[in-house]
Length: 247
Image (tube, rainbow, N blue to C red; front, side, top):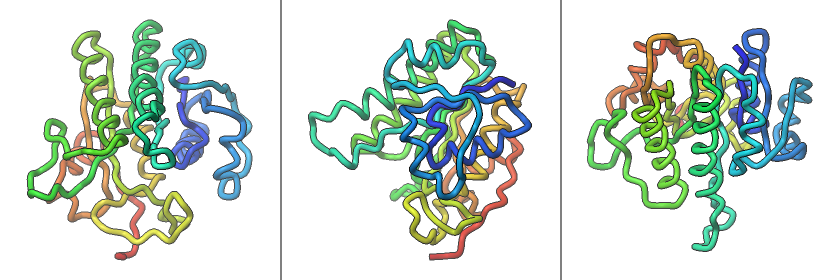
């Protein structure tokens, strides 16, 4: 499949590029050539098809999706660096960005969009988290990630866009034993290895039976008590191979 990977130079993006090698024809999209420097020490250079632009710019996204069969959106703006009320980037990157991807996918007739969402695994009041039960979010990042899911739901309902949303929480690398910031990864029920997420993206792209779904992704077996991680195994066929030491 010809796949545009949005946010390809990031923490999960580099694992996806590694996973897709020899399986998909990839076009990597990110904000600038400098984006590759962050994780170069772990991965070296990537020499495939690369395009640059702002995910909040529809024309840039539409050019990236030209000729593609599918898209994986890994782009995210956390907003921790600038928590001020004047910071519009979380809305532009997280919400306008997914609208751009889905609208371009609709116009171009892409077969599948995979969206990387975000979710806690254990909800404080003990409610079981499913595709229809959201975690409580009060900060700007959490709210915009929930809004991404709603945009996906609306595009599926209105246009029949085939979308699978994945909900990870804490994303580490079990092979390197580190978290996204390079610190040691101390596991728990919230954790998932980025290489398992990359495999989930592959399986979602290849899946022919699911039109729309939202699935939690966590490797710890106890996560099944709190959220629908089992669905990612039973329906998507994901086998979690990465595990972390208890922290």
